[in-house]
Length: 224
Ligand code: BV8
Image 1 (cartoon, rainbow, N blue to C red):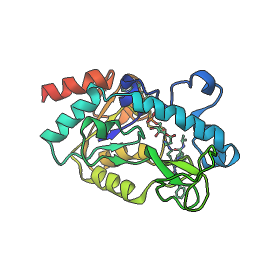
Image 2 (tube, rainbow, N blue to C red; image 1 turned 30 degrees about the vertical axis):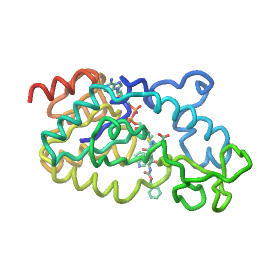
Image 3 (cartoon, rainbow, N blue to C red; image 1 turned 60 degrees about the horizontal axis):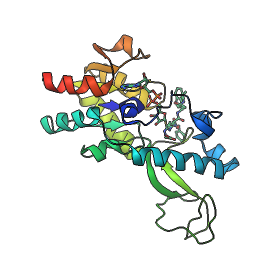
């Protein structure tokens, strides 16, 4: 099962396709979520993630997240793979979530990628790693960066072996995650898409459940 930003839309977390609001309206997410942007304007990118961290911290899992918890309880072999960095699947109670693009709540040293638990004194923005003084960065995968190998391998293995693949709330534009539902289909899985809108995946899906995941997923679980 693959989820995208759409499953968190009903929790009030804007999707990447949504236009950015407020002081971020003049920036495109794809421009800010890059190592180049962080290198060129560390404070701007850090502040953008600070704004998004506040949004996700205030957000609560919605009925779509909770329906997937019930599905996993019913089918323990289910692998939940997400492109989202908001941590809402785990907060809803899903186990062993594969976070392909990392987690926005994590702080990493921008020099060596190790987790940072303490900032260096001095009040820099972005803060600096207490160990080496390099800027701290959010623990997400930026455009142009490789996905965590273990996570991608787990996701690909699940796609190759599953009988049913659900693609939920994703525009199917961001690779390599976008290739997972088709990888599952090529290996014989039944492919179900849940999205209010059509995506490049729609023509390949065996079933297209058109609607918001917070409505469709509880109904799907109820019907099983
Ligand atoms: C890499 C973390 C290589 C950061 C993110 C092949 C083809 C083309 C391009 C590429 C390719 N291979 C690589 C690329 C380049 C690039 C890419 O894919 N570019 C695209 C934009 C053209 N990919 C990369 O750079 C990846 N890295 O390939 O590295 C490499 C290898 C070795 C060594 C070095 C390098 C890295 C990609 C990861 C980027 N990071 N997030 C952050 O969050 O700040 S991706 C980011 O975009 C989010 O994670 C988000 O999930 C994703 C957007 O996708 P969606 O989740 O689908 O969200 P979106 O907004 O697009 O759509 C929302 C959907 O929800 C819509 O369909 C909407 O209809 C629907 N919806 C709305 N409401 C609801 C709903 N659905 C259900 N219910 C609702 N209520």
